[in-house]
Amino acid sequence: MQDPGARGGEIAGRVLAAGGVPVTEATVMITASPGPHPDIAALTGAGGEFSFRGLPPGEYTLLANAPGSPPLTRTLAVQPGEAATLDFMVEEG
Image (cartoon, rainbow, N blue to C red; front, side, top):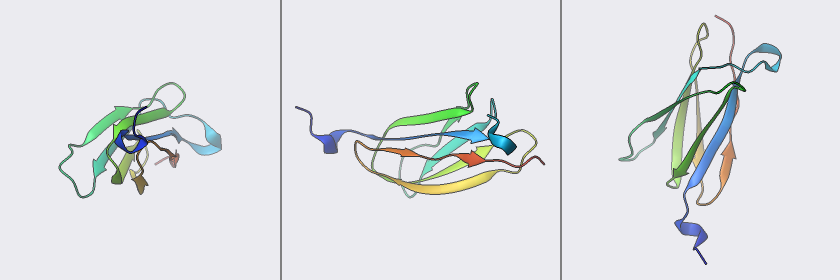
């Protein structure tokens, strides 16, 4: 049996525009704060979804950048073996 504390955490969510419309190909970047881990970036899929898996426990800052919208930043904590959900609601610029 695997020790749950040995598993990484996950952050998943969506980037949405007004009315809940998914934003495709928005860039979401994640940075550990503080930490030696490099920044990781992902592009949202057709449903506006993104995910980062296997993250070491700690606090992370996420930056969502959608075309035509100002960038949004959020910070949240990741626990071992747990999944955190974070949705970004972007405004048209």
